[in-house]
Length: 634
Ligand code: AHR
Image 1: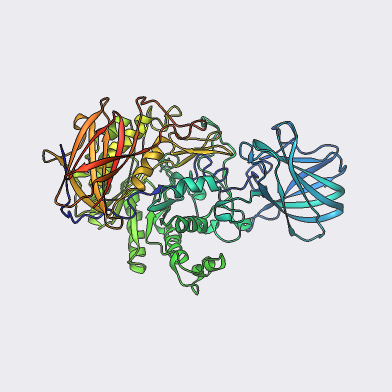
Image 2 (image 1 turned 90 degrees about the vertical axis):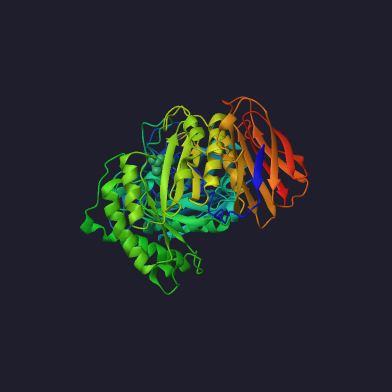
């Protein structure tokens, strides 16, 4: 018999309890959330012709008897260094093809926006034609713009596509002969999230928004740090006009991934302004993480000398001004110029992703002092490294405690059984110390980041069990998020991932469904749920937590059964008056190996039902290997 006490524990569930960790890994931004379909639209990649291929091949060669393309460097100064100069000698034959991000997804009947910056140089090229083609070269949609100036000018046109295709390409041809310069060749679907021009992919944001996330952490992950300091993420280069955002080789650019991505760059079309805007759209607290002068420790681990740390610290201070400052401050003005004069009301900032040891603590101290003396109200999230145990972990926590750190980020990528066995992890954490941000976690079915890891039901069920422990310890645990968030089925570096997508479709894994069950039923106040006076942490495979929601007047009980047997539960509610109608949400599966897929995206997803509470006792059967939520009006 489980007993829920309605007595006030005084412990609040923070509105930030269940959130989202976004990192541009696995094509999550360019090629994913950011809906641009042209790869290397401004010819800025290290190999400047990447993405631009010959018809019917993947070869990067554009010069033939019909014409040629050269990439010209404007200058080393500034941010937009290159453009393409196209010489058309024979307008019948000269063709440019863009391959997109493993192709381009287009939909029958949908509208697309083409835009290009062009300047005529000599001769007379009268038209630039853009066609969307399938693998056989069939035209699925087309449009034309007519360049009429020898100065740089933006040309735009909209057209409809007649057939759905997942791996379409773009073909560009010319009418007339001569020389023309091109830059920012761009193609977007019109149907983006909130209909914003050149915006975000709607289905992907919808999956995120459906989670009702308490926060959005961005932009990573290791990309914050960069493989080298020179290649770290610098937020100032990601705001302002998109053509002026300097692109960067993604830290996850690699030949060696299971689905190699040697063409992985960050265009920053999804930059810090857009992340703040997305947070606002979803009602999530923005939680930016900034580099602290340490490059990715899995690579060079390069450190900035202490006497050169200032620009890094200044970036943090300026970011707070960008997010919250008045429009008469320099960075507040940048935000206003981008269309958001109101502040974003940022409350949190993270300093350093997953760093540890004395090098981190030494640098973190400088940030803490600078931020707190100028913005005492901002809550700083600090790191504890990639290992949720061991000497460095203990050292970091000890130091951070002494410095009165407010929130410490912990990461754990562990086997499913670790999650089942560690649901009591936070029971012993100091209630008076820093709070915890469980910022990156996911059950690894084979080994950390192994390409063979699966997003199967065992992993999700184990996380569900573990999460009862996060919630039961809401006094200490203030923010939590699964990681990584997203992966393109044809270009990824890391598994498991919460959401999988291709150029047309997306689905939430069972792990996504678990997260969503928690995040859409977070409650506001923790209650005590026990069995014979003890917490319910894995005995007979049962795990449980209970909360009430003072806004909806509901009691919400979450129970996980990891055992192979159905279990009859008798849940008694003490000390409150409860109505009789209980709504039940259950997600379960006999097969622990089962997964969701593009073909069967909701195979593992919650089913609704009902039950009856009689004289404050709920008698229900929780199926084997299942996660159930019972909700009843108080
Ligand atoms: O989530 C994938 C990576 O795991 C993150 O970039 C990093 O923070 C962690 O090591």
